[in-house]
Structure formats: structure tokens, C-alpha cells
Amino acid sequence: MKSILDNRPGLAKEVGRIAEVAGYLWQKGWAERNGGNIVVNVTEYIDDEIAAMPAIGEAKPIGATLPHIKGCYFYCKGTNKRMRDLARWPMENGSIIRILDDCASYVIIADEPVAPTSELPSHLSVHNDLIGKGSPYKASVHTHPIELIAMSHCNKFLEKDVATNLLWSMIPETKAFCPRGLGIIPYELPSSVALAGSTLSELEDYDVVLWEKHGVFAVDTDAMQAFDQIDVLNKSALIYIAAKNMGFEPDGMSQEQMKEMSVAFNLPK
Ligand SMILES: [Zn+2]
Image (cartoon, rainbow, N blue to C red; front, side, top):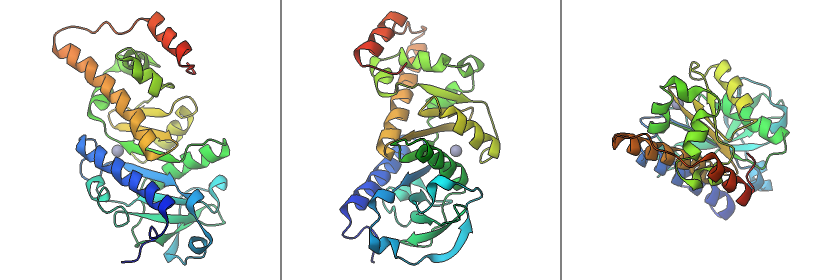
């Protein structure tokens, strides 16, 4: 079957990276059933031929008016699709959409009429914000990392930067590779406007935010980088839990050791 990825190595590589990440999310147990979402801005790979491609089906409203994404193209996981299937067949479990000139609707252009995730408005609001800020970030990932979600069931970890400092202190690399830390969003109904709004504002200060008792939402230059940030944070959570299981509260690196890290690696915080 003909695919938009044929003879387009740049786009094929980007979609391949999304599929690889989807496989990791499933293997880690972070993507049960149709859980999680990946949306990636692929506009840089769009050539004249793609720009001229007709829509597959009708224009659909996004549910928001987002001026900065006018004419942009996104790969979106399909609604009700499974990450473990997307890992093997990314263009059957996701699609590439074009944002129309009204900035409020989109059409699917390839490969099949796979309707995008029901979380499309919140993901696209984030991408709209990133483009508006001139950010190099192109990918948003939502997933259900077990240990980070477990931590969000304890009130003390929901205070600002308590979880961030604890996770950073478990192993030096976590601060180096997730230098902005973990933002916290108190419980909100999944897919709600309130959840999308607080995610947008928390992403001003963090690349990864923890939705209380639900999961994480991360942004970065591509899906792999966003995954890596979540992965290092969850690794720290696992180290913390391993220490607790051995019967002690881990000491963690000291504030001096973490400060030394920030200076040595020129980290923002
Ligand atoms: Zn979720």
C-alpha cells in the first residue's frame, strides 16, 4: 500500500521514532489498552506534493482556535488506538493532519482516515503555545508511568518541587537530563478544559508535568527526548522505592552536591 512515508526519509525517520517510543511505553507498562498519546509537529518535513494532497474526509473542528498552528502538520495517535499496535503500524494507528486556515479545524491527509486522539485540543493548545514562544519543541507525550503515578497518591509529593528535589537527589543524571524538574497538577477530570489549562501554565516552568493520580505530560524536541525525560524521572522513583523496600528512607544527594551538578552542567535551576 502507498504511504506518505514512501521516499521521504526525514518524515519516515520521525514517524519511526514515534513508533519506537510507543513500543517503549507499552513495554514499560505505561500504556495499558489505549492509554497515552503522542502528537508531533512534522511541518518541517512537508514538501509541495504533501501540501497539495487532498483531504481524506471532511474538515473537523479542533475545539479551540489556535492561531500559531495555522497550516501546520501533525502526526497524531488515533483515538482508541493502542500504543503497542502503533509501535508496529504507526500509519494505521495514527494519522497526519493539516490545520486549516481558520486555525480552528483540521483535515486528515494520510495514510488512512484514522481519527486523531480525543485529547487533540489539549495537545494542539500546547503546540500552539510552543510555536508562539518560539520553542524548538515539536513533540508532546502523555503516558501512565506506574511509579510516578503512585507517588502522586501521597500529598507530601504534591507540594511544589518536593517530588522534583527528591527525584533529582536519587541519581545525578536525573537533574542533568530533566533539568527543569517535574511540575505538579492537582487532580482534574481527564480531557477537561481545566486540566488542559493547568497543563499549559505549568509547562511555562517545566518540561514534564505530573497529573495527580493519572499520568504525565511531557514536551521536548522529539518524542524520544520527551520519553527520556519521563524515563529518567521514573528511574529515580524506582530507586526511591527500592530503598524504601529495603527498609530505609534514602539519604539522597545533598543540596551542595545538587548545586555542584547545576554549576558543572550549566543547568537552569
Ligand atoms: Zn491518560
